[in-house]
Length: 402
Image (cartoon, rainbow, N blue to C red; front, side, top):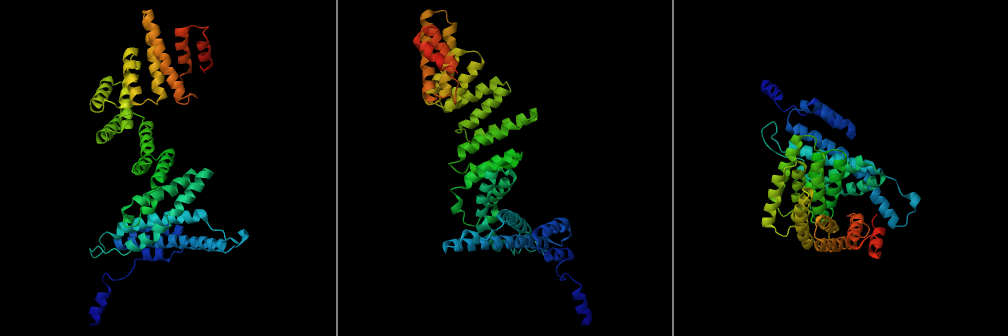
């Protein structure tokens, strides 16, 4: 019997490995994280790895709990009339850093917690507890991130707002109540995407912008910025081709998104692929004959080919589709002025100038400070061509030319 007992004691029930014991003895997050990273391969199985990361969650949440308790005490004190000098300071950045640590440690813990243990069984121990205790404290990341943005601390802003968005999108937190965040998650994701781009983390930027696009109030701005990000980092022909293929994929999925159409058209124009550019715009107009972007791009394409008549035709249609766009009216005026200057028929020339002046005047009405379109000098030239140098109307237009 003693021999049997001795043999049993040498089997797989020896308890935690030395590596895990060392991790579990640590009292501060930085030391524990360093040990986990250094000894992850020495941990005996997935269960030990999950236990190690759960210890990181414990340590991070200890710091969170301590600082949240101070905040709560201060709030109660203020309600009871406590003086400002009696308010207890707390570690604002330390709290936010600890929330980030808790989020990523909890997600990593769950990755191993959901894998088979040494016995080949999947028996998660930490998922529910970690999700429930970490989720409610994430809101500190939004406020602290906003304060760091005011200070110009871009690195911290990206850390805090990125963690907030990452956790909101993580399957680990899927069962938590997201309702209270629906009004602002898109905005946080949009700005996180911009900060990620500034940090040259392009994949991360695109990921956050995809989240922002789910919010109807942020969709347009997020899409425009996403398209800008896609086109701004091109360094080679291979990059350009990859970008075109991605834009084609996006366009085929959502052909009604005219900004994607415009971006793809711009790529073809930059590549001097006029055949692809023409086919894209013509096919789009066959489906969407009143598409402002396609009509305007057809007009600009004609201008680039020095075809003022064709340009005026398409820009007129674009102006009809969107009569509040000063840029289109300015380019329309340029086309009409060009026709007026090149025709040998005096009557036609005057008529073109009159139409050009109407277009430029509309551009001035829509954009009097020239913030969108610099219509000033072209408008003056149209007045000069129709009325001559000394006419009072020409003089008035001359005053607006710069």
